Length: 314
Image (cartoon, rainbow, N blue to C red; front, top):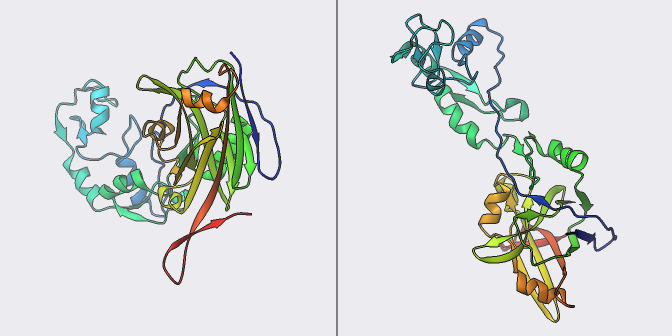
């Protein structure tokens, strides 16, 4: 089986190859919270006391201790089979209430302070904030491989370009041709990711084949490389057609905070059933030849009427 994708921008033409990969997505997270460095030795010592010796994450109630006073978090208590990892004594069910009380008095910066977050929180509120912090790193948006890379947007753009060697384009209009030699075989697979740079932002165009219930389909959708709040400032359209017919889709790109699988399973994009895709392809219906065109624009607020008006790039 051979597949290829020909892509061309409206202003300049390029042809690139397509690879098809089995879909295998795994979310990845940081395994530990970085230690905080303060000028005073007391704050540093307290934070060290609140660090679990097994997983090195900060501990939250219930904090357990053995008879000799060694502490660990509740998650790791089950991992060590109720044996203290420091002295090997039986742990029992002793709570370290004193350490829990000390933690209540602390105010600490977000773990993503090095990425730009200026917030300071009470110890027990910090974890909840960090789960939704706008400065937290993004997972690599590349679909079809087990990639554990996380980072900010400039880091991920360089990673996609240098490591995954994705197609990189500038401009807010696109014209791609997707070709599949045996369209009767539809499995969970994805074509090579394309990254667009426009309005000073980056967008990922996905195209793939999968089973929707019992029906084989193709799907194209766009993801924004940034958070959900920023993504709502942009819109995009996709169009596919042939033989005097066409399908269109218009919406806002989803943030890469939402996993590739989550977006696909929500069907938030242009979905083409196989029979319709072969109709668009023309010919003897033995080869898929879909041309997907689209554009991206930024919604701007009209200062007079308060209405959003599209800002199209040239």
